[in-house]
Figure 1 (cartoon, rainbow, N blue to C red):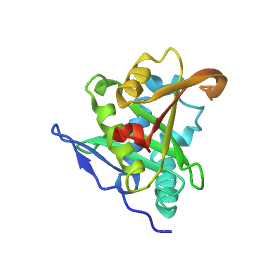
Figure 2 (tube, rainbow, N blue to C red; figure 1 turned 90 degrees about the horizontal axis):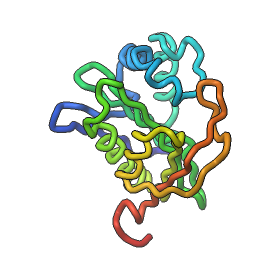
Figure 3 (cartoon, rainbow, N blue to C red; figure 1 turned 180 degrees about the vertical axis):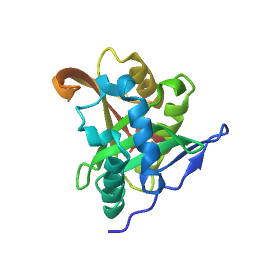
Figure 4 (tube, helix red, strand yellow; figure 1 turned 90 degrees about the vertical axis):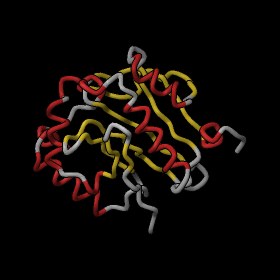
Length: 190
């Protein structure tokens, strides 16, 4: 199956968003190691290899061997050569559903600059446009105010709350469930 490729895009301040396929695994490992304490409460428990260059070489190699956009689309934010964030569209489902899940993380030093809203907007436009999806779903822990604000600014609507929905840092946590439909993002009926 051949799908359109995500083309890198650049903000006015030089921040670049590109597909994981073209990013240095050492830079991705550096981002995760540098932000481990900052992101630990929002992530599942990870094996030690997740924070190493070798681990990310394997992850990147497997991703390149898959068809990006078929089951997942992993995007990376960079300032120069330094990775400063990730935007992932996972569990892509086709057929009657045409949907995926959105997840993201941003370097602590880059928060509050509109970078994640910009990056997620670019990724969402791609999954709704060239990939042809209809729904993007995202979840957040109720006390994660920053994530709630980012999703609200992107137009995501709250659909409910799920008890003990995801296991983050070894603890089952409640989550607010949200979604964005293609017609809502485009400002029309679908």
